[in-house]
Image (cartoon, rainbow, N blue to C red):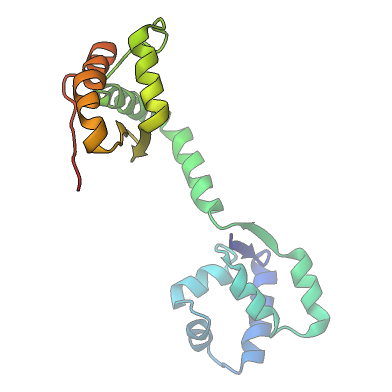
Amino acid sequence: MSERVFIGDKNKTRVFFELTRQNSGFSSWSDFGNSIGLSRSEMGYVLAGQRSIPSELFEQLLVLVPKTKRSHYQKTAIRKPKNWGQKLAGKITYSRHKELFERGRLISNKKRKEAVKFKFDINQPLSQDLSEFLGAFAGDGFTNQYGPYRFQTGFAGDSRFDFDYYQKRIIPITKQLFNFKTIKIHKKK
């Protein structure tokens, strides 16, 4: 993961960028900023020590610093994860507006519970029907998740040999055991 780099306080940052600008051959801050991909306003924030720069850009700029000072900047630069600002902003926003977040969580949980179509007792006693269902599932069953709340469970078999068995035995067992109202059958050639 890419990192973000703070060179240091305002004075140290200004000296670093002054060295890199002079050694780059650009006389104006605007031209220098454009050459390294920073707009005039972004350059102002960086020079003021208020913004970080990508670690890749920092490494490119280090080449423009005299060798005698490179190791100093490498050692003293403050490196942070790429998303550190987003995490910090999220924590600050949460601390200021906890009640809104909690209300949102309650609404989300309620919607998630309402989205569940089928509920069944996972602790139901083992019966012949449940055993047959589990055996068929172990042989030809599959399950998958599509998105955060959509799950699919099914069976795949050869329609020449398995269609009657699924239709006459497995589907009625499934409806009875798990209280499913509708079950879809897809036939493919």
